[in-house]
Image 1: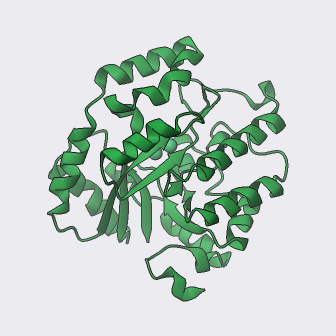
Image 2: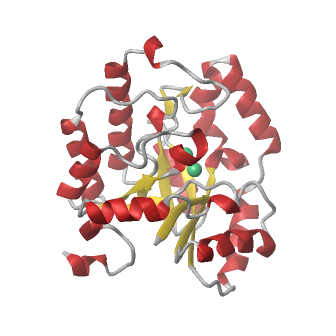
Image 3: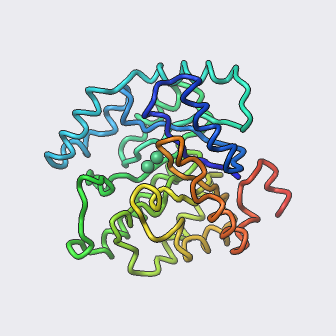
Length: 278
Ligand SMILES: [Zn+2]
Ligand SMILES: [Zn+2]
Protein backbone atom coordinates (compact mmCIF):
# COMPACT_ATOMS: atom_id res chain seq x y z
CA UNK A 1 0.00 0.00 0.00
CA UNK A 2 1.05 3.54 -0.67
CA UNK A 3 0.94 6.67 1.46
CA UNK A 4 1.31 9.49 -1.05
CA UNK A 5 1.17 12.49 1.30
CA UNK A 6 3.48 12.74 4.31
CA UNK A 7 4.98 15.95 5.76
CA UNK A 8 8.37 16.16 7.47
CA UNK A 9 8.22 19.85 8.41
CA UNK A 10 7.65 19.39 12.14
CA UNK A 11 11.13 17.98 12.70
CA UNK A 12 14.73 18.46 11.66
CA UNK A 13 15.82 17.24 8.25
CA UNK A 14 17.79 14.28 9.54
CA UNK A 15 17.88 10.52 9.22
CA UNK A 16 16.51 9.90 12.73
CA UNK A 17 13.37 11.89 11.97
CA UNK A 18 12.66 10.26 8.63
CA UNK A 19 13.26 6.82 10.14
CA UNK A 20 10.45 7.42 12.64
CA UNK A 21 8.05 7.81 9.71
CA UNK A 22 9.49 4.77 7.99
CA UNK A 23 9.02 2.52 11.03
CA UNK A 24 5.31 3.42 11.27
CA UNK A 25 4.98 2.77 7.55
CA UNK A 26 6.54 -0.67 7.92
CA UNK A 27 4.30 -1.54 10.87
CA UNK A 28 1.23 -0.61 8.79
CA UNK A 29 2.27 -2.48 5.64
CA UNK A 30 2.94 0.68 3.69
CA UNK A 31 5.61 -0.03 1.12
CA UNK A 32 5.84 3.35 -0.56
CA UNK A 33 5.85 6.89 0.88
CA UNK A 34 5.69 10.20 -0.95
CA UNK A 35 7.30 12.78 1.34
CA UNK A 36 6.34 16.34 0.54
CA UNK A 37 6.57 19.76 2.10
CA UNK A 38 4.17 22.70 2.05
CA UNK A 39 5.37 25.54 -0.13
CA UNK A 40 4.50 28.01 2.66
CA UNK A 41 7.51 26.90 4.69
CA UNK A 42 10.00 28.06 2.04
CA UNK A 43 11.25 31.60 1.51
CA UNK A 44 11.31 31.18 -2.26
CA UNK A 45 7.56 30.55 -2.43
CA UNK A 46 6.42 33.84 -0.95
CA UNK A 47 4.67 35.11 -4.09
CA UNK A 48 2.19 32.21 -3.94
CA UNK A 49 0.71 33.82 -0.82
CA UNK A 50 0.13 37.36 -2.12
CA UNK A 51 -3.68 37.08 -2.25
CA UNK A 52 -4.14 34.89 0.79
CA UNK A 53 -2.03 37.10 3.03
CA UNK A 54 -4.04 40.17 1.99
CA UNK A 55 -7.43 38.50 2.51
CA UNK A 56 -7.93 39.35 6.20
CA UNK A 57 -6.00 40.15 9.38
CA UNK A 58 -5.87 36.57 10.63
CA UNK A 59 -4.42 35.24 7.38
CA UNK A 60 -2.01 38.15 7.19
CA UNK A 61 -0.65 37.35 10.65
CA UNK A 62 -0.55 33.64 9.90
CA UNK A 63 1.54 34.09 6.79
CA UNK A 64 3.77 36.73 8.40
CA UNK A 65 4.64 34.20 11.08
CA UNK A 66 5.28 31.49 8.51
CA UNK A 67 7.51 33.80 6.54
CA UNK A 68 9.49 34.71 9.64
CA UNK A 69 10.16 31.05 10.32
CA UNK A 70 10.58 30.08 6.66
CA UNK A 71 13.64 28.19 5.50
CA UNK A 72 15.55 28.14 2.24
CA UNK A 73 14.35 25.50 -0.21
CA UNK A 74 17.94 24.32 -0.37
CA UNK A 75 17.67 22.90 3.18
CA UNK A 76 15.08 20.48 1.86
CA UNK A 77 16.70 19.69 -1.48
CA UNK A 78 20.08 19.08 0.21
CA UNK A 79 18.33 16.69 2.57
CA UNK A 80 16.72 14.88 -0.36
CA UNK A 81 20.15 14.46 -1.94
CA UNK A 82 21.52 12.99 1.27
CA UNK A 83 18.56 10.64 1.62
CA UNK A 84 18.96 9.37 -1.92
CA UNK A 85 22.15 7.62 -0.85
CA UNK A 86 20.28 5.81 1.87
CA UNK A 87 18.59 2.46 1.67
CA UNK A 88 15.11 2.38 3.21
CA UNK A 89 12.91 -0.68 3.71
CA UNK A 90 10.13 1.13 1.81
CA UNK A 91 10.22 3.02 -1.47
CA UNK A 92 10.45 6.78 -0.95
CA UNK A 93 9.80 9.78 -3.16
CA UNK A 94 10.36 13.45 -2.39
CA UNK A 95 8.26 16.33 -3.64
CA UNK A 96 6.27 19.41 -2.80
CA UNK A 97 2.68 20.20 -1.94
CA UNK A 98 2.08 23.43 -3.81
CA UNK A 99 -0.72 25.85 -2.88
CA UNK A 100 -2.26 26.53 -6.25
CA UNK A 101 -4.02 29.78 -7.13
CA UNK A 102 -4.62 30.86 -10.72
CA UNK A 103 -2.18 33.49 -11.93
CA UNK A 104 0.82 31.92 -10.23
CA UNK A 105 1.71 29.46 -12.97
CA UNK A 106 5.04 31.09 -13.77
CA UNK A 107 6.03 31.13 -10.08
CA UNK A 108 5.28 27.41 -9.89
CA UNK A 109 7.11 26.76 -13.14
CA UNK A 110 10.17 28.46 -11.64
CA UNK A 111 9.89 26.33 -8.52
CA UNK A 112 9.65 23.21 -10.63
CA UNK A 113 12.85 24.15 -12.42
CA UNK A 114 14.70 24.87 -9.17
CA UNK A 115 15.12 21.18 -8.39
CA UNK A 116 14.17 17.87 -10.03
CA UNK A 117 11.56 16.81 -7.48
CA UNK A 118 10.09 13.33 -7.90
CA UNK A 119 6.61 14.85 -7.97
CA UNK A 120 4.63 18.01 -7.35
CA UNK A 121 1.14 17.70 -5.96
CA UNK A 122 -1.21 20.65 -6.31
CA UNK A 123 -3.65 21.66 -3.57
CA UNK A 124 -6.60 23.99 -3.46
CA UNK A 125 -6.18 25.50 -0.02
CA UNK A 126 -7.59 28.91 -0.92
CA UNK A 127 -10.69 30.09 -2.75
CA UNK A 128 -9.91 33.54 -4.14
CA UNK A 129 -7.64 34.24 -1.21
CA UNK A 130 -9.84 32.71 1.51
CA UNK A 131 -7.98 29.98 3.42
CA UNK A 132 -11.01 27.80 4.09
CA UNK A 133 -9.31 24.96 5.92
CA UNK A 134 -7.58 26.76 8.75
CA UNK A 135 -8.51 25.23 12.10
CA UNK A 136 -8.25 28.69 13.71
CA UNK A 137 -10.61 30.17 11.14
CA UNK A 138 -13.62 27.83 11.23
CA UNK A 139 -16.82 28.65 9.32
CA UNK A 140 -20.43 27.57 9.23
CA UNK A 141 -22.02 26.17 6.10
CA UNK A 142 -25.17 28.21 6.81
CA UNK A 143 -23.19 31.39 6.18
CA UNK A 144 -22.27 30.47 2.60
CA UNK A 145 -24.00 29.70 -0.64
CA UNK A 146 -22.61 26.20 -0.99
CA UNK A 147 -23.77 25.86 -4.58
CA UNK A 148 -21.67 28.81 -5.63
CA UNK A 149 -18.79 27.88 -3.34
CA UNK A 150 -18.46 24.31 -4.58
CA UNK A 151 -18.77 25.35 -8.19
CA UNK A 152 -15.86 27.74 -7.68
CA UNK A 153 -13.87 25.10 -5.76
CA UNK A 154 -14.24 22.57 -8.56
CA UNK A 155 -13.40 25.21 -11.15
CA UNK A 156 -10.13 25.91 -9.34
CA UNK A 157 -9.42 22.19 -9.20
CA UNK A 158 -9.94 21.99 -12.95
CA UNK A 159 -7.58 24.94 -13.51
CA UNK A 160 -4.96 23.28 -11.31
CA UNK A 161 -5.11 20.07 -13.31
CA UNK A 162 -5.26 21.94 -16.62
CA UNK A 163 -2.09 23.90 -15.80
CA UNK A 164 0.04 20.80 -16.57
CA UNK A 165 2.31 21.80 -13.69
CA UNK A 166 1.52 18.92 -11.36
CA UNK A 167 1.85 15.17 -11.02
CA UNK A 168 -1.23 14.91 -8.83
CA UNK A 169 -4.20 16.56 -7.18
CA UNK A 170 -4.23 16.50 -3.37
CA UNK A 171 -7.22 15.94 -1.05
CA UNK A 172 -10.02 16.88 -3.48
CA UNK A 173 -12.53 16.90 -0.63
CA UNK A 174 -10.96 19.45 1.73
CA UNK A 175 -13.72 22.06 1.40
CA UNK A 176 -15.82 19.82 3.63
CA UNK A 177 -13.33 20.13 6.51
CA UNK A 178 -15.88 21.90 8.72
CA UNK A 179 -18.82 19.77 7.66
CA UNK A 180 -19.97 21.62 4.52
CA UNK A 181 -20.51 18.69 2.18
CA UNK A 182 -21.37 19.24 -1.49
CA UNK A 183 -25.11 19.75 -1.79
CA UNK A 184 -25.47 18.97 -5.49
CA UNK A 185 -24.36 16.03 -7.63
CA UNK A 186 -21.64 17.89 -9.58
CA UNK A 187 -21.46 14.98 -12.04
CA UNK A 188 -20.43 17.28 -14.87
CA UNK A 189 -17.72 18.95 -12.78
CA UNK A 190 -16.31 15.60 -11.67
CA UNK A 191 -16.25 14.34 -15.23
CA UNK A 192 -14.42 17.42 -16.42
CA UNK A 193 -11.86 17.12 -13.63
CA UNK A 194 -11.43 13.41 -14.34
CA UNK A 195 -10.93 14.11 -18.05
CA UNK A 196 -8.22 16.69 -17.50
CA UNK A 197 -6.44 14.57 -14.86
CA UNK A 198 -6.37 11.68 -17.29
CA UNK A 199 -5.25 13.88 -20.18
CA UNK A 200 -2.35 15.23 -18.14
CA UNK A 201 -1.44 11.85 -16.69
CA UNK A 202 -2.10 12.96 -13.12
CA UNK A 203 -3.16 11.03 -10.07
CA UNK A 204 -5.82 11.96 -7.55
CA UNK A 205 -5.56 11.32 -3.84
CA UNK A 206 -7.93 9.11 -1.89
CA UNK A 207 -7.14 10.90 1.34
CA UNK A 208 -7.74 10.14 5.00
CA UNK A 209 -6.27 13.54 5.92
CA UNK A 210 -9.61 15.17 6.72
CA UNK A 211 -10.66 12.28 8.92
CA UNK A 212 -7.31 12.41 10.74
CA UNK A 213 -6.75 16.15 10.96
CA UNK A 214 -10.34 17.50 11.20
CA UNK A 215 -12.38 14.51 12.40
CA UNK A 216 -14.35 14.41 9.13
CA UNK A 217 -16.89 11.58 9.09
CA UNK A 218 -16.32 10.75 5.42
CA UNK A 219 -13.22 8.95 4.25
CA UNK A 220 -11.78 9.85 0.87
CA UNK A 221 -13.70 11.02 -2.19
CA UNK A 222 -17.47 11.02 -2.25
CA UNK A 223 -19.10 8.25 -4.28
CA UNK A 224 -19.91 10.38 -7.33
CA UNK A 225 -16.41 11.80 -7.57
CA UNK A 226 -14.87 8.36 -7.20
CA UNK A 227 -17.23 7.01 -9.86
CA UNK A 228 -16.09 9.73 -12.29
CA UNK A 229 -12.42 8.92 -11.62
CA UNK A 230 -13.08 5.21 -12.11
CA UNK A 231 -14.93 5.76 -15.38
CA UNK A 232 -12.10 7.83 -16.82
CA UNK A 233 -9.46 5.47 -15.46
CA UNK A 234 -7.72 8.16 -13.44
CA UNK A 235 -4.91 6.88 -11.26
CA UNK A 236 -5.94 6.88 -7.58
CA UNK A 237 -3.40 6.88 -4.74
CA UNK A 238 -4.09 6.53 -1.03
CA UNK A 239 -2.74 9.32 1.18
CA UNK A 240 -2.85 10.18 4.88
CA UNK A 241 -1.63 13.81 4.93
CA UNK A 242 0.36 12.80 8.01
CA UNK A 243 2.28 15.55 9.80
CA UNK A 244 3.63 13.25 12.51
CA UNK A 245 5.17 9.75 12.26
CA UNK A 246 2.23 8.17 14.15
CA UNK A 247 -0.19 9.16 11.37
CA UNK A 248 1.67 7.54 8.48
CA UNK A 249 -0.56 4.95 6.84
CA UNK A 250 -3.47 5.77 9.15
CA UNK A 251 -6.83 4.62 7.71
CA UNK A 252 -5.10 3.58 4.51
CA UNK A 253 -6.03 -0.14 4.84
CA UNK A 254 -9.68 0.96 5.18
CA UNK A 255 -9.48 3.11 2.04
CA UNK A 256 -7.60 0.38 0.22
CA UNK A 257 -10.31 -2.15 1.02
CA UNK A 258 -12.98 0.31 -0.05
CA UNK A 259 -11.27 0.96 -3.39
CA UNK A 260 -10.98 -2.78 -3.97
CA UNK A 261 -14.62 -3.27 -3.11
CA UNK A 262 -15.65 -0.42 -5.42
CA UNK A 263 -13.56 -2.03 -8.13
CA UNK A 264 -11.52 1.14 -8.45
CA UNK A 265 -8.54 -1.21 -8.17
CA UNK A 266 -7.94 -1.24 -11.91
CA UNK A 267 -6.79 2.36 -11.63
CA UNK A 268 -5.38 2.15 -8.18
CA UNK A 269 -1.68 2.78 -8.21
CA UNK A 270 -0.41 0.25 -5.74
CA UNK A 271 2.67 -0.24 -7.86
CA UNK A 272 4.10 1.00 -11.10
CA UNK A 273 2.74 -1.98 -13.04
CA UNK A 274 -0.81 -0.82 -12.76
CA UNK A 275 -1.32 -0.97 -16.51
CA UNK A 276 -1.23 -4.74 -16.30
CA UNK A 277 -4.68 -4.69 -14.78
CA UNK A 278 -6.31 -2.80 -17.66
ZN1 LIG B 1 -3.04 20.26 1.90
ZN1 LIG C 1 -0.56 18.17 3.17
